[in-house]
Length: 417
Image (cartoon, rainbow, N blue to C red; front, side, top):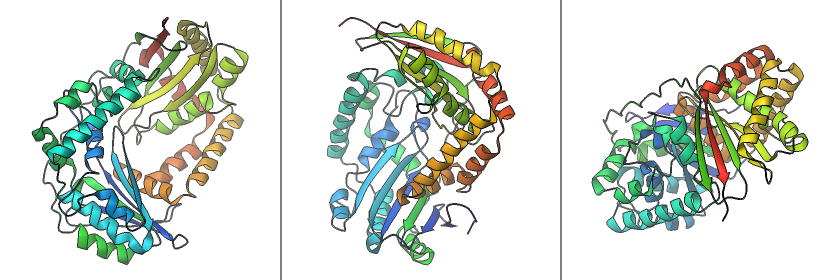
């Protein structure tokens, strides 16, 4: 068992399934989490949104489970899932004494999902409605369609997880759906984490019983198209009936496991995390230009984005907002970040990490996600990297990342109703 903040046992089945057990006898519950290494980055143009579509389809029926939720509710369990550009994650919480039910349900839908015509068409309607409600009918709702398309030219990060356009979702045929399932929903493309009042020997036995007979896919998964290095600023103007102008400025940054990721993450926290951040103080409280502003990183596996976004005060244009933002970024980069300010951000991160670790579900999520990146130990390594970085290193990385030629800017303009 590795000696870190999230103790675990790890083993692999011959079919390629990676299994992690996190024992916590203080809990009466158990969390069963299965992560598939598939997201919207594994899609192709014209067939976008399939990863998210499958998140819905997986809650249909499988060969021995007519209604997934009903069987789980019978044993006092609940479930949910989420899709990101990089992974699709399914999780079940239930009394630890009923953990075998989770093994039965998840193994059945990994091996033999029914994918009936009725299920496919029902979920197609649900997803299209979600697309309309969340992305087309909400103020600023389509921002990530615009920003991803602007910031990326080749990489599949250029569309959001919901899909590039509704026509893609409407156009899935049975061959597309079955091929996606058979290519990605297999033990050799999954990480299973079970945490709570369980033991390694118990979970090892159940895993071999329920997942051992499932064959690996035997498929070679396609390499992800690399994004060319960006060398000039990109700008797009979007006009819509929104309350005020908004500004979105994104900078290219290293991927999750690359050198420089933690520096970019810390930089975004110093600039725009919380009420005491630089941009909040300068542009909201003192500047009277922005009604709100924040900075964050997307946490992408492949090279991603550090994003600064804000809504303007009434009567202020996004162009005025960008000019003020650029001034503050220049001031920020001209001075070395103080060790005091850096330590404050590190302390906030440590407090948040400690808070998150209280919840069993969060611990299981982190073990699964970092295992998908290469090792559960990367969770601790990322934290250690943040703890070790000094102000000089952080300033150097900030100056490298926050450059105009690496930026993509959306001016979201308010037009009269």
